[in-house]
Image (cartoon, rainbow over all chains, first blue to last red; front, side):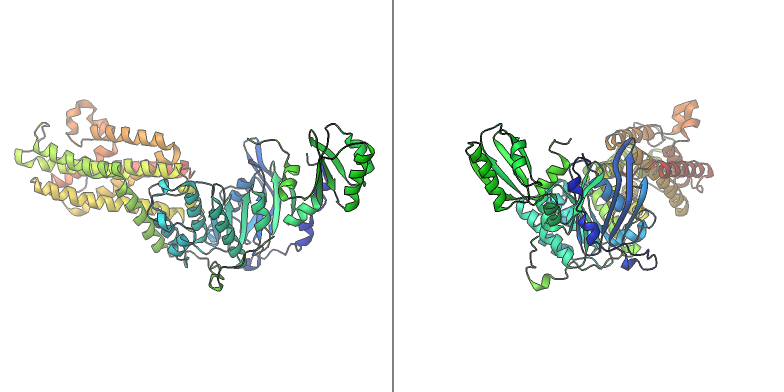
Length: 336
Length: 265
């Protein structure tokens, strides 16, 4: 699939935008990038979860790992926090090896995992206070609970919290130790819109305050809104990277969608349009022209239709979204 | 990309990094306190650790359906040491195994591995909570025992030595089960073994009742603990070397095996 869409992989603008790798600075981990992953491979038995991923994140930036289920996002995160040992490649978080320097790294990072991780009978507030007690200079747990809307359930046992409340507690646990860097594995899954927006505001506040953030998501809007760097992974490989803007622009500037009787000759239509336009009929009677959209292009589509006595049912010019790019890159089939 | 401006200027810097690990003592204390609250909040755990031993002590001492080599007024001298052994086993083995098994199943052990809490302090917290509950059991059982006419002999140091060895052996067995098996399997096994170790552990009747097989059952940790405690508290001897060796071996073997096989997730 990767080889079939070479044009989509050409704009690796992030590689250009990011500064060249700094020399290793073991004596000064404070100056190291937030995250450097080089050729990470992780296999489970004969299944390759991550097949050669390389990433780099500078301090105080937000990186979104975007990909369908089973793309290797969680495995990548779990390797970064020292839960898994890479089969090949290196990982450096804040300049430290997540396995060999684990004890030094753990106080400096905050982690939100997908589910569980809390004593079932522990109350919401006491669990956060417990995690706060691990840190030298934690945030005020009560204020954090308040900010995340958990004050009304502070005395509720974890197992009786709703899924969204459990998610928010998990986020609070990641933040309470004032980490330099946080890893958030699908932070907004199962949240209602209010909680999702509060989570976004928190990620923005983290970035503003100098915290580096790696988050995984399959929510395009989330990646588009929060991330400085977006990395799309699928089948354990990085298939595109850049800022959300670069990815959208790089993939194709815009699209023209129009309705007309089904079965038009899209090849002939394509031939009458500027060279770098692609025409397809994704559904009978709906046509999609992807390429650099201009008034002349719209006129050319209309002219071709007029010449062939085809009545246009409707025509929309649309800015593409990250979701369009994502689906184009990862395919539209459903994942297990 | 739209950025939301902070609600107020006071919000700026609220997440400014100030990472660092708390002192070990503070982490350990917080961990013990949490584990203790969880233990005492768990109904089955309280039943197993406090109600059952207290009930057995009262019933066995006051209703003479089990014959022991003690005079009528001295039945408590036989039963209190045995019930102390049972209480240690309930807390350090069965309760500990079940709680740790479910902590593992629910990802707590894995999750806390991504916090500054060292794993050694996590286990220290569990052990500390067990010790506090044991102290509570000791106070309750000794008080009720004395009320039932118990007249202890022996030196406290020997008793503490036996209790410490017994706790280590039972904790080791608990971690061995909980670290390798599924939580439900651990739950079932920990309860079955509790019953087996109770019945064949010389706790509510003398091991000698088992006849020729008694020698083999003396190697059970519950039997070593109950006979050792009885030697000290009923007969006024120092802690028997043999029972300490048996408990020590159980502790070393189970803790070593647990360290080798324990899976955190």
